[in-house]
Image 1 (cartoon, rainbow, N blue to C red):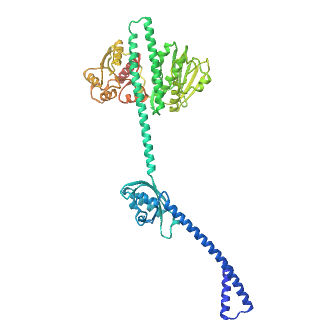
Image 2 (image 1 turned 120 degrees about the horizontal axis):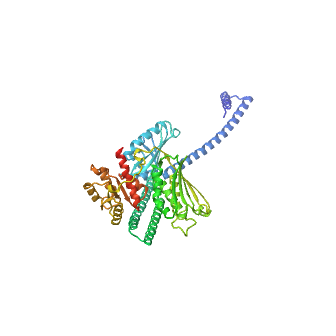
Image 3 (image 1 turned 180 degrees about the vertical axis):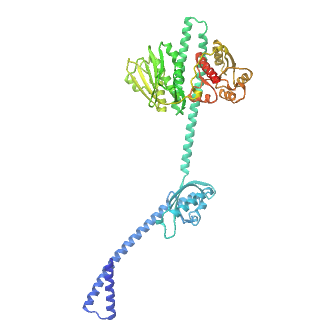
Length: 570
């Protein structure tokens, strides 16, 4: 009702009341009474409508209250309504179940007492915060059971001024049972640990397989080298040469299969290091594949751009493995001519060009080139399992590198690889040292090897080159020989029973004995990059991977002794 209408109605009412007191009603006054009666009838109708609306609103509010009460009561999450002091005014069934107490006994209790002692300070702090400033606070806590056990929960405290009645502050607490979440987290952690254990088992298996296969292969190739140095007929020399080539091919197959299996088993951690492109990448490739190329009458040419920085920082071991596979494939599929490698700098790091004069590849072969067990056009005339390019692709993916292939049938193949690397200053202890021939007559070598055949091979091969060779069958004997005699260099097997080569090396380096700085070269069947890092970190000067030939051993001994001599002069 508007204010003007109300004022008019009040005026009519007052006039009618005055007439009623006087007892005299004129015709004009009768009209006023009739108007008042009409207005009152209208007003009564409006009041009845408003009362009906009010009754409907109250019914809706009651229905809403009942719905809320049922939702509150039967919610799957524990709820409680607290006052500003943290006393429970109301709690639902889920909360009663969580604390293992009758619902009726929760009212009037301090919520504080339902929590483990370690959780109470955080609760008090957050309760005061929402009471003072409103809003929402949450934290993880432990809810106590009646019998002293506890349940991990997440508490969410909420206080809204609109929900408070006068000065009566109400705080709503949601109590979320975190047991299923913690159980899933534990299951995920257990699954992750199981996966890590499986990866460790795979890595250990691959390392064991590498060791167990390379060790006898080293004996075979060593014996063939010894046999090659004896008086043989041309026919016998041919047989020995063929056996050596087949053995070296077997070594390459072994490296491919184990390398691919290892990449397939997990994601090896990158080893970023300073390296010299020629000494640490190209020369090892030349040493590993030069004999194979020469055996086929191929020229193997590895060159760098004149302006290329000598020192770089990157993943040298993976780059070396990529180049070994690319050059090995090129040699395998090329019948005559040459295989060349060119290395230059590019904005992303290093760009390597590998070219051959082989048969080239068809489009069909190119499409599946990087699939495991894919082989080229000459599958009937070449051997191998087809893993080399798959390994290259996976290594490049791990490094963040790229590869491009240019080829056509009958026109050879060019492969361009780009790998991330940064030019850097070579550290003093990493500067390449010019290797000068060392007079073998002056070099006393201690060979530490537990395998009888491999020890015999090392002793005989070095002896045939006029080294003065002494031997030890285990780590303890090696330490005893070093304490008794003077040697120029130690060739140390790594995996030996009892004290292994790494432990022997650490003891030598940690001792105060005169021989603590003696050069130590690892002879190992552990061929993975992180193995090399581990051996160098233990104090070894260089690493020879089995199987190896005598020229590789001589070059390594010469390089190590020359470097030590240069250190002594500086």
